[in-house]
Each structure stands twice: as C-alpha cells, then as structure tokens.
Length: 330
Image (cartoon, rainbow, N blue to C red; front, side, top):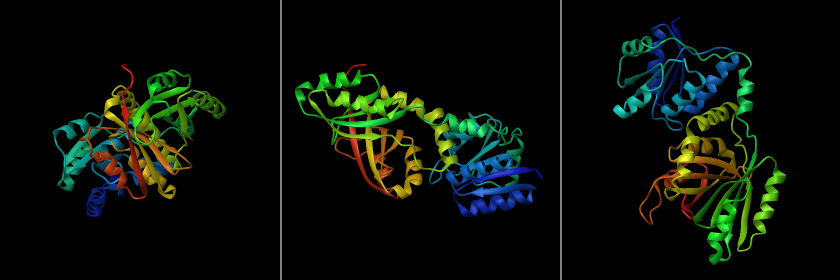
C-alpha cells in the first residue's frame, strides 16, 4: 500500500473518480464532501491512531474553503503532504497554496497519473500525534475569562462623547464602539468571573446620560468537539490578526446581530465564522443569536454583500447591521 489519502471535494463524480483511480494505484482512500466532514474524519483517525499520509483538497466548497482547511491542518500537522486541486485557480491562489510547506498544486482537469506524480513529489508525512496531546490542546482552547456584550443607548446626546470616553477607559472593557443602528454603543467586557462582569455592569449603569439596552454573556458555541478545536486553531492562527487590524480601522467595520435557529447553530456558526469578511463571531442569548464584526465598504444606502450572504444561510432568521462610528482619534 502506498499510503492513506484523505480527499475533500464537493463534487460526487470527482470524489468517485479520485477514489477509484487512487485505489487502483495502490492507495487507501477516504473521500469527504465538505470541510466539516473532513474535520470529523481526521479526528476519528487520530483517536484510533490511524493517520493519513496525504491530503488532497479542493479550494471552493460549500462550508469551509480549502485554503482555510490547509491553514489549520498545517498548524496541527506541519509535515503532512497536501495537494490543492481546483478548476478555478489563478496565480494568486496558486502562490497562496504553495506558500505552505510541503504543499503541491494541481489544476483541474487532470489524469490520475498526473495526480500520483504530484503526490510523489511531496515529502512523506502523517497525521498521527503523540498520545495524550489531544486533551492538553483542547484545554488550551478553552476560554480563560468570561465575556459579555453590553448594548447602550445614549439618553443625553450632549454628553455622547463624554460617556463614550468614560466607557472606553473603564477597567474590564475589552472594546467599546459607537455604532449607528438600534443602539448607540456596543461594549465588550472581559473579567475573571461573572460577578466581576456584573460589577462592571453596575458601574456602567450608574453613568448619567445612558441606559443599558441589554447584557448578553458570551457563550461557547454548542458544536462538536473536533470542529470546536478546528475553530480555536483558526482563531489563533488567522482571525486574531484580522481582529487587531479591524480595530485600528473602525471606519470600515460594522457589527452584525444575527438571530438564528438554535438547532442549526453548528452549521450557521461555522459558515459565518469562516467568511473572510467576518473578523470575529460570538454566540449569545442561549444560542439564539450571533454577534460579529464585519469589514468592507458598500455604497451609501446599500446593504453590504456580506450581510446579504449571511441572510441567505439556512437557519438565519434575521440580520441587523450596526455601522461603527469613529469617535476618538487613535
């Protein structure tokens, strides 16, 4: 046997042809139709101690595109040989894929001998990990603090800047943004306990010229363990840098508050989280809402493309946008 290959492609005919063709060439093949099922398969293989020797992944898929999967898998398994396949590639995409170590690139359509030759050009590697590392990694991804969103309405417009400044400088305030929407300010608080969050809430409520519209603790999304680990790794590897960049460009960002069907939270959360323009995404209100920040410009009076995209996800009930207003020079 030449090795075990995990194939990810959303087209049934391509999965079938690759499975048959690589099997005839002496490989053992498991094929998955999307990123989530591939994450589950990698997790099952790891727990059983059965690794994969190669990953073959398409780029454009319905849930998580191949470049994002590549980023996380390379973080977990840096030596694993990965072959990126696509029928809609360009030089920029090819450059991005090949910038990852031990990664190849192949344009569709291709013949099985071309695929085998591309795999054989990669260095050998596998997805197995040392026993006992899984629990430590999962624990490392857990939230070490508690967080909550406060939405605030200004009741004395003449004190708007003063109130905003006071809130921004309060201990425990992770971020504070003036917005244009149903409320005037969205504040993210972080503390070591729920009691400290409640204490901050009381301090905010005591400030004259405002009223608190809502207090919503941030919840860990109710998604499968292995998908959650995948999200955590991608958050650390990619999203954190995007978040820092967006906070420095407040004039180009908006919050979105997404009402969802809680029974569909895994599909909705992962779909929204992995959209490029989404800087971060949190779950609140017992899994019935998502709060996120999005980037990107749109014409005045026109709904941003990303808001329309989120609205079309199955299980999304309503999307509200609150554009961030720059209040202070930084």
